[in-house]
Length: 264
Image: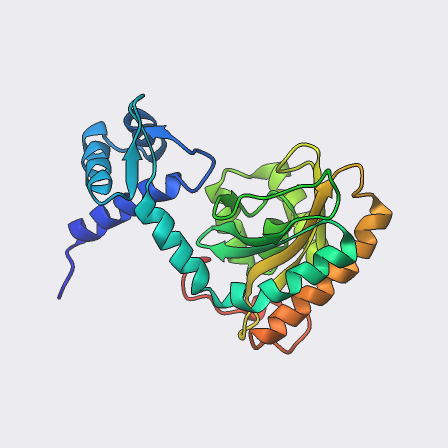
């Protein structure tokens, strides 16, 4: 059955509305959704009403909306079906035990990354992450090590899309070059104040960075000396996961990775 351009556009708009709820906002109103997506309130209202009927969204008393039980069921099913998660999760407890910090697994989803799993740290004061929330690739160690191993044209497109240009883009590119050379990257308080992390990329059969393994903890424990130790442990686990996905090389050259659509 053929699909008209209008149908495709409508489906894309509907998907964009749902994806907004997997970013930083738990609850959104019609006006806010319309503003963020540059759509009319009438269009957003029709989409939201349809999603409420299907229980993909739930209406609140203050005229905002949140993700509904149908979305929770879909998310749980997606996690169960994730090959990356199935391969990586058995290693997270060991990584947590080796470092004492919370071990996490992230996946590349479109132009963002999403936490798929975590093994919480051993200390009373520890960092935890929110499974399923989307984060930009250029901020934080997990996103940055994934972004580092994308082809240069994809990196340029992604930075442009999020408005990172000029000196800021050059600073990010220097960080990405360091990640490509070392195979890991660290961050201190970039995405979350008071938190630090160390991450290494996971590659699939074709040598594409499709995820990341990391450890994260309070910034006072993530010293340069600790990060160097963590980098060894994280890189070893990332390599094991990559092998489990079929990648048997070292660090791939991003220029040789073929992507048929931008970071999808």
